[in-house]
Structure formats: structure tokens, C-alpha cells
Length: 413
Image 1 (spheres, rainbow, N blue to C red):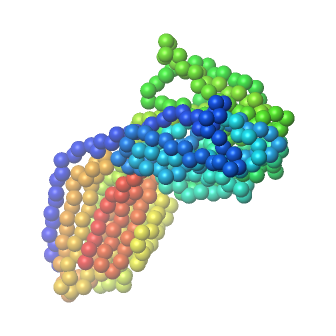
Image 2 (image 1 turned 120 degrees about the vertical axis):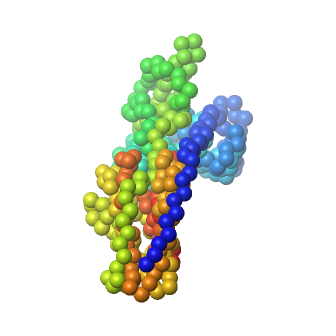
Image 3 (image 1 turned 90 degrees about the horizontal axis):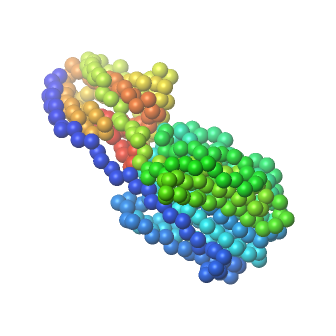
């Protein structure tokens, strides 16, 4: 058996992305009655912003909602998200009045923050959602719409958050909740800065905080204690003082009490993730065929995972395991060549590619490629395994500002 060795050296240049987060307040329903929302008239409210290279995610953050009591409902959702616009759709299907709706919106072009929508839900129960980023560490729930037929006293809670899913439960007295919508806002380490997470039964004004250009304030309602003795009227606001470069926020639960999460969204997230680091490659050749079909074995401290004849299988390796071994076994038929490429990365850029070609002969029936990789980020790792008769590969999916897939190695017949 013979093999050819090619090494390609690449100049290392950091990838540069523009981290973009745009935000603003809007008042589609206000005391001036310039727009009406009732049983016969719903709203499709357009929002435009500076154009992005990619379609962003949108956070719809309700800051004020004032509705008449007894039985009422407001429905809201974000739709038709484009590179420079989206629509907020508002409906008021009950006979009661919706007096005021104020929201703050955030258009986010960063995959380290994930926004999951659960709009206008009529079946009120615990729900589990899949999310994309295995390195998500924290999250918030933000109510976007509500319907009721009497007093309520409930709150939403993130019950479980793991590498692939998030579970949200509803606790308390919610028998009179007829409709509920919310968003789940998830982020990696360094995405958010928590200021407050409390129940407020009286008007509250915070201390002064320093205004910083890299942060934007979110104030999320995640529960209500509505007494039904007056309007469903809940308000949060922000006061900025340009003289001393500070701000404070206020919460006014005039309809009873409210559960609020107050936090800052970081506009330039410093946490970044890189591909696994190439440590060692060993190649063994066998005269016999101990394994009849091609297979990939991924090993780390927790155990071995064996794959054969599979395309697009995802495997998650916990961040506590810093070393991963990948064994690829290939049958080598006479007069056949086996070509392979192994990539070495530095900060998400290929620093070196190792290209090999093995030629089979009658005495060499199988080749084993054993690759050792190191997790230098101390982050959860998502690998994608592809194995067929003619092609074997393992790649890694990483979420920084954009989602990218890095090919760790490929082997072709």
C-alpha cells in the first residue's frame, strides 16, 4: 500500500462579523385612539429598520397593556420577518376594550441568542420546545398576549433547560386564562446581565444604572396577579438622565401584581466558540478485514458511539469531556484508492489541511484512521456524522453570530 501526503498551509485571518442589535419602542394602541383594535378590526402593524445581511430574530417585549376587566383578550404575534422589516399582528376578539399596548422590539442578528415563539396559545399547559444552540446557559420568558374571563394569579417558569430543549411550566391559578402567548429568550454565557427578577404588588422605581452603549434594557412580564376589580393595567417604563449618563426603570402593576424579569441584552457578545483542535492522527493498515462494513466510532470519557450507514446524525458531547477520539474503519478493495482530508482550525479558520491518498493492494484489506481532538473552549460540542459506502465524514456545528458547519475530516473511496 502506498500513500501520498499533501499539506496546505493557509494564512490565518480572524473572521470579522458585525454584531447587530436594533431596538425601539412602538405604540400601536394608545390613549389618542389613532388606531382601533376590536372584534371587527385587527391590526397589522409594520416595523422597519436598517437592513441586515441576514433575516434577524425578533423579540417582542410588551411594556404596557391596559384592558377592561371581566372578559377580554388581546392576541399578538410577529410575522413576515425580512432583512429590514417585520409585522406585528394584533387582534382583539372580545367585546371589551384594549385601551393601551406598548412594546419594545429587538431585531437580533446573532445565533448566540435564540428566540422561541409560542403565540396565542389556547391550550394552557406545560410545554417543551427544541432549541438550536447546545451552549445556551440561561433564558427568560416574556408574555406577549393574554385572554381572561375573571381574576388570575399565575406565572411562567423555565422548568428545564438542556443542550437541545427548554421546558416552560405555568404555575398558580390560571383557570380563567383563556389564551396566553409568550416568547422564550435564550442565550449563551455573556448574552444577558440580570438586574431584577421579582414579584411587584406596588409601584417600584429602581436605583440609577450607568448608561452603556453595549446594552439594551428588556423588562419582561412573566406572570400576573389580576384582581378583576379594575382594568387589567400593567406598566413598565424607563427613565434616562443624559446629564449624569444614567437610567432607571419603573414597574406599575395597577391591575394587581406582576412578575417581572428585568435584564440587559448585550449588543456585542464577547463569548465565541471554535472548532475542536486537532491533536493527533494515527493510521493503521490490516491484511485481514476485522470489520466488514465501514463504521465510525466516537469515543470520550462517557463511552463509545458506533455508527454505520447513517447520514446527518447529530451527537452532543458534554463540555466536561475535553478529549474526543474518532476512529474510522474503511475496507480497502484491490485497485481502489482511499482519499482523505483532515482539517486543523485556529479560531474558526482552517490553519492547515492534511490531504492523504492510500492505494489498496491484495495484502491490505482495511485502513483505520484514529483522530484525537481536544475541546479547548470547555463548551458543549455538536457533531454531525455522515457515513455511507463511498463517503465518511464528521463535522461540527457552531453558533457564534452565525451558524456554521466545520468539516473536521472527510474520507472518500
